[in-house]
Structures are given as structure tokens and as C-alpha cells.
Amino acid sequence: MAERTDQPTVEPTPRAPRPNQILAEPATPQACAADYQAGADIRQTIARQDARARR
Image (tube, rainbow, N blue to C red; front, top):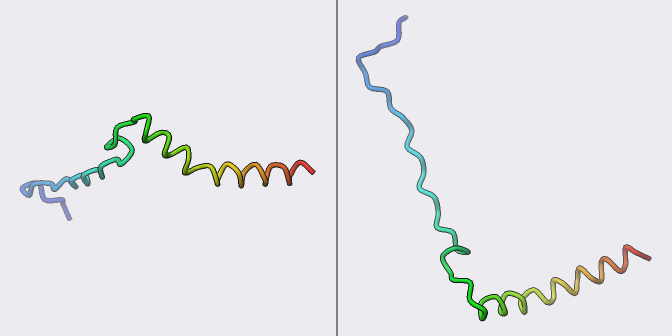
């Protein structure tokens, strides 16, 4: 059976991208310092794991 050419083809519409939270907030010294402080426990855990792996 031949394909109909009298019907318009429907192109899928792309989804709208979600806003990026990182880009939405300005990179201020205060925000950077807060991020660094929040990561202190993670850095400590990584250091402990690294020291354990070197034994």
C-alpha cells in the first residue's frame, strides 16, 4: 500500500530544557566558601579511604 502524501507529517517537538541550578545562581565568594565548607566531610572521608588503600 502506498504511503499517503496528502497528510502533513508531524514532527516531534523537542522538550523544553530544565533550568540549570548551577547557572541560575551567581558564583559569589560567599557561595563558593559555603560549597567548600559543605564538602569538608566528603574530603575527609576520601582522605581516610585513600589512606586505607595505601596500607
